[in-house]
Structures are given as structure tokens and as C-alpha cells.
Length: 283
Image 1 (cartoon, rainbow, N blue to C red):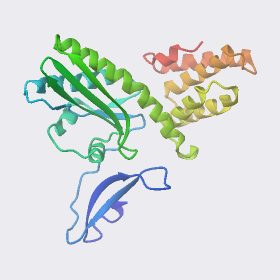
Image 2 (image 1 turned 90 degrees about the vertical axis):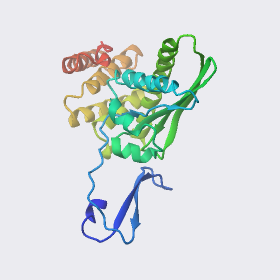
Image 3 (image 1 turned 180 degrees about the vertical axis):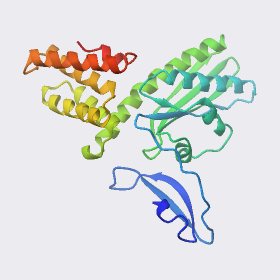
Image 4 (image 1 turned 45 degrees about the horizontal axis):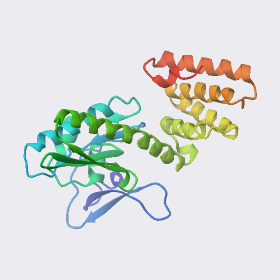
């Protein structure tokens, strides 16, 4: 790591971000040696939190009309606000994201500076009374992989109605794809290297197979998440939901005991966080 050589050798280093290398599952951070330059002290980059972190970069105004700048900014702000309502996401504040407005950006550098795993970016283009809005979701920690992209064409009869409609369409498309990406990401890591959030994601993946063969793995990952974070309400909720589902499907080997355990887990989830809707799903 660069911290091991900072201040010990008379060389400069440029952070190139994480790179996806052949035959290596996880991205590897790369640096370029700058001969003849001494390395200057730099503040450490923000770290990515356990739950998925996301930033909505300012949507670009592709029109000749400068008034569309307000519409583009409005779309950006509304998407940020709506994503912030999801309790499973850590959303970067508007002021931090808008610091990159009008800049030619490198997704990996933005990810490193903001400490986010996912980035939403897009553009707005107007043609007469029609507007075209594009948006895309990028996994900045997975080799700048595009997870989702969409284009929306609308008539600008009511600009606020269009803004609201497109915002909801974008947000409702992003959240499930991001959740799926998190589960796939956790599947790629060795079980012994998983943190509480990743164990929870692995548990969800096994749970959503809805197979009795996945029962033990589902419960094991949820319980491991609780060991790492005793206040992880969603992991308790996962246990309650998983066991209750097994009972409903007639796959429970001990219906009475499973129902008791499911009820206790769901009750604990609600006690820890009554605002988490997952905790109310179980028995």
C-alpha cells in the first residue's frame, strides 16, 4: 500500500484507482510512479461504508438553452432526495456531489474522493417541446461497470410533472438493480472475509432461492451478520422472514419451534428499529 512508502522514498505516486485484473475477482488499487517528483502529503480518501454508498452527480445540460440547467439540477436533486428515503442506502449529500458540476470527471476518482461504491449520472437534452433524459447507474468499485441505463422521452407540457415522473421512474429502476448487485458482490467474496452487511446480503441471496436446501445457509449468514453487528435489525428480520417462508411452503422440519424463533427474531428486529419495514413482514 502507498502508506507503506509515503515519506520513505523520494518518489511521487499517482493514484489510478481500482483496476479489474485478469484472473483476480476483487479490483486491485493501482498507482503510477512519478520519477523526479517527491510525494506530497494528501488527506486520506473516504472509505466505503458497509451498506451500499451512492452519489448522484449533476445531470449534464446537453441543450443550447441555458434555462435547461435548472431542470437538469432539479432532476439531480430529486433523485438524491428519493434515494435518501431508502434505509439500505448511504446517499452522499447534494453539496458534495455538486462540487463536480461542470467538470470532466473520472468515475474512479470521484468514487475515491466521495467514498462511494455506486454513481448515478445522466444528461438532459431539449428539442422544442420535447425533452430527452438519460440516466445510468455505475458500479465504480467493479471496473466502472454499467449496471443499468435508460432513456426517457417526454413532452414538456408541465415541467414539474415530467420531473416528478422521470425521477420516480429512475429511482424505482435503480434500487432493485443495486440490491441485486450487492448480493452478487457478496457472492464473489470468500465467506470468511465478509462483513456484517455482506453476510446479510449472502443470507438474502440464499433466502430468495426459496429452497429448503438453502435454509441452513440462509440462517447461518444472517446469524453471522448479527454476531458482527448485534444491532443489525434487518438481519433479525431476515431470520424471521426466512423461517416463516419455510413454514408457509411446508418445508419446515420443526414448525412449532421455527414459528417461535421467527416470532422472536421479528420482534427483536422491530425493537431495534421499528422504522425498518422488513421487521414487520414476518409472523
